[in-house]
Length: 475
Image 1 (cartoon, rainbow, N blue to C red):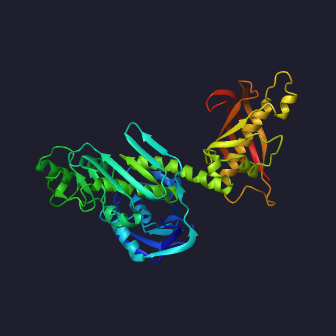
Image 2: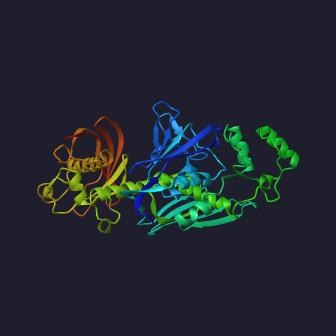
């Protein structure tokens, strides 16, 4: 696998119409500097807004993946992203003259072709891989979807689909080398849909740019030729259309026997670009689709952000296991010290939203000497303080990527502004382990409102304390 980032050597363009909008579209790939990422640029809008291609900018996944910033959006980006990822490009500008890339022939091959024409430029910065160290599993029982990431010091993808349709059957495919296989074996695979979906999409005002030469349409119900011609007239599709003997309209021949499975694999690679980093791991997917892909990407994006934080605070993965922040990292983030540092580790976190810290309560805590000598109980106010410190870790890790210190390099301070609805449900005694769950409810400037709960001995176990607190971040 490549070790250094790369971009393209020169700008290249391609023209066409958008699949759903039918808009005339010109897409131009341009070189970008190190650590720039993949960004779509709407040059038809005022100030040419840029949209970073990551999961935080996804706004719709109903029929393809749509990303946006404010009112500027780009629809069906997955084929473009698949081409970029398939060519192992890290930094690139994707300029568009409208809100959707050209559909081309329904595959990623035309995009790959012009990227190969542009050539690749190795940059000095190292690639920032998401390394899968433990199994990550997404499952949707209702739709029988499973997507799993397994540890591997390489990148492989395996896909299985089963639509229970005679024209498709069950299909399997696997990619084992981006460099050697993507451009020739997967990029040419075209988008496909069932005939009933064509009707539904047309009624929704979509597929205005859909043609029989940019999609494979699979017949999924019995029709006469007359029925088909009436349907095409309703859809506003002119020209000769025949029921395919192979179960595909117009006897459209598949480019590969398992072309639909290969296209699903290509879509998955495109959606995984939204992690914001290439992957070292083996991805196995059963019946994937954009909705499931995006939910899976959210899990991987969370893992990627957590790994970045571990690196920032020098958390040793070999020693930490599932721990996000160990005590050494916590001491770099919080100004508290003995005997008032009341969080030992962080075991779960969703950046900007939620965190789970752990406080191990031992008989050696200094406050047990006086509270109470004959029956040691942890003071309720210190449980609230432990929850607040955990909330501070969430805020500091989510809001300042350049460091959490003040101008002198010292950790920032968090001040209580209010404590509401504090309830103490169970006494906390030596030997207990407190799981401190904190969720951000609202933010206004530097003031945060948080919902806090402390559980005894396991998350969602016995509730020891709960409260809503507000803290202000200062220096």
